[in-house]
Length: 248
Ligand SMILES: *Cc1c(COP(=O)(O)O)cnc(C)c1O
Image (cartoon, rainbow, N blue to C red; front, top):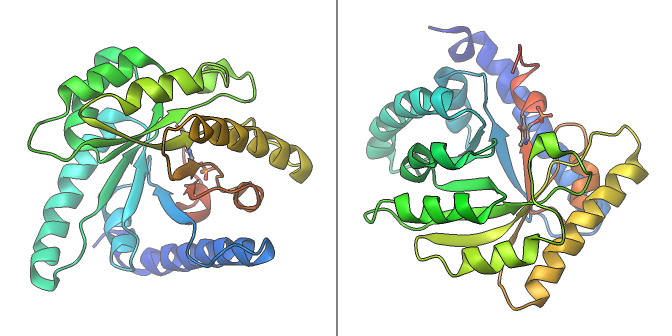
C-alpha cells in the first residue's frame, strides 16, 4: 500500500475535513447558505492514491493543471473508481482542467475532462467545442479573467470577458458555467477582497447582458474566506487539502 492509502490517508482526510470546516465557517460568517460553495480539490502533482482516498470520503471534483500528468492519473483513478462505483452505485469522479491551455493542446482536454476553468481566448473555446466528442455531454466552461494584470497566469481582460462569454454561450458543444480568476496572491484580506470583488463585477456584468451563468470559481488555500465573502461558488484548493507540493 502507498502512504496515501495507509496512515498518510488519515492526515489527508483530516486536512480535507479542515478545509470543509473553513468553507462552512466562511459561509456562516457572511450569512450565505450552507452548501452554496463547492470544493474543487486541486490534485496536481499528487497521485492516484491520494485522489482515491479523498473520493472515498465524499470528494468528487478534482482539479488538474498539466495535461500529460492528468491523463495518466485520470486513467488510473477512473478505472479503480468505476469498479467501486459499480458495486456501491457511487457518483462518478468529475475532472476539472484549471491550467493554462494553448490552442494546439485542446484535444485531450476536450476528450477527457468534464470542466475547463481556464478558457481565455475564442480560438481555444472554438477548438474545444469542435473536439468535444459527440457521445459526451457538452464540456462545462468558465471564462478566465485577469483582474491583476498578471499576464503570466493567463486570463482575458475584464473588458474582453463579455464578448468571449457570448461567443462560448453560442458554441454547440460547450456549456458556459461561469467566470474563473487567479488574482495576485496577497496576505492582506482587504486586497484579496478588492480583487475578488472585481471578478464578481465581471461575472455580474456578463449575467446582466443576458448570458446565464451559475459559477464563480475563485479562492485558493490562502484566500478562500475572502473569495467566499465576495460570492465564490467554487473554491479551488490544493495545498490545504493535499499538503505542500514539490515543484510545479
Ligand atoms: C494550484 C492551483 C490552485 C490551488 O492552489 P493552492 O494555493 O495550492 O490551494 C488553484 N487554482 C489554480 C488555477 C491552480 O493552478
